[in-house]
Amino acid sequence: MTAHIIPPLNPPLPFPDRAPLLRAEGLTRGFKGRGGLLGRGHEVLALRGVDFALARGEAVGVVGESGCGKSTLARVLLHLTPASAGRVLFDGQDLARLPRRQLRALRRRMQLVFQDPFASLDPRRSIGDQIADGILIHHLAAPAEAQARVADLLAQVGLDPAHAGRLPHEFSGGQRQRIAIARALSTDPDVLVADEPVSALDVSVQAQVVNLLKDLRTRLGLGLIFISHDLHVVRHLCDRVVVMYLGRVVEEAPAAALFAQPRHPYTQALLAATPSMHAAPGARAVLSGEMPSPANPPSGCAFRTRCARAQPACAEALPELLPAGPGRRLACPPALADLAHGAAHA
Picture 1 (spheres, rainbow, N blue to C red):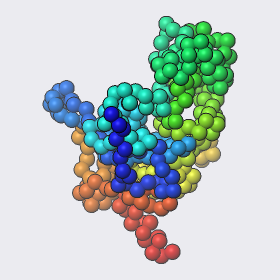
Picture 2: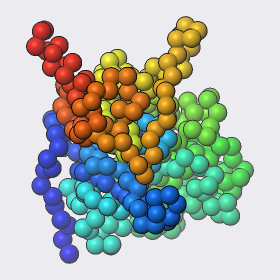
Picture 3: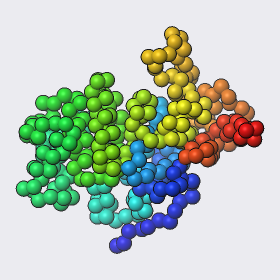
Picture 4: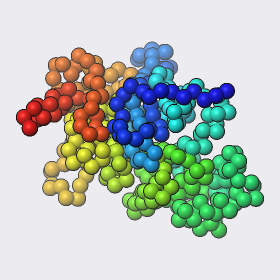
């Protein structure tokens, strides 16, 4: 059965000069409730019409508060969790329409690094055997050659190849995350999704793992989706940043532009709340209120209940994610109006 090649999609690309390797249109993912106040069968939407694109060799950071849908987006992009609506294309092929055998072969090119490296590794098997799994499953090397490949991967992530026979508990947290990265690289992927890969590590170890990802991405030409709460790390590592709030993308921009001049009020609040060694005492802003429940979101713009710039119109219609400059998209009518006013008087 031949692969389904999909024509170009409707949403504008943030990089019109480059064809995307991974692209999604209108991704929606709902989960059925099991009871409670809302009743059995009520659907809670974790993703609400997300458009996303990743170019070859690009690093995209996905940021937002806990519960905004970042991890669900990662799993849906890799087709580990099927989308309720919308589609995901990898190299022009719709993942949901591929036969199981073709999808399994394509998975070699898409790998995931989980947040907790100890939970994601089998405590009863040596790290060498676990790294070799992908090589053998996808027939990338003969069994006799796989161990040499494992040794090379361990060296690439800064570990001693002689330790391939050890069990995961014999390594530190940072070393285990390096093992998880080596395992993800074992299939020669084109896209690596890292879901909070450094959040459980000490600060000094975080820097080592982030620098490792940066080096591997440059050296191997990996496309990287980096999910994180740490905006400092995202700024250091990523080319472009996607900001999510309650299952939707509210702003997307090149990293330098977003950190220099955030446009969406939510992005501004996130950056203002980020701790800084150079901030004056009392200068740190605090994002007031809590994120609404995805089971009962506000009408219109979901952020309006916490936004100082909210207007009556913000409650009436869901804001579209519209172009707002080179490589930039924004879902906030007041901010877009400010841009248009500034351009008219320029």
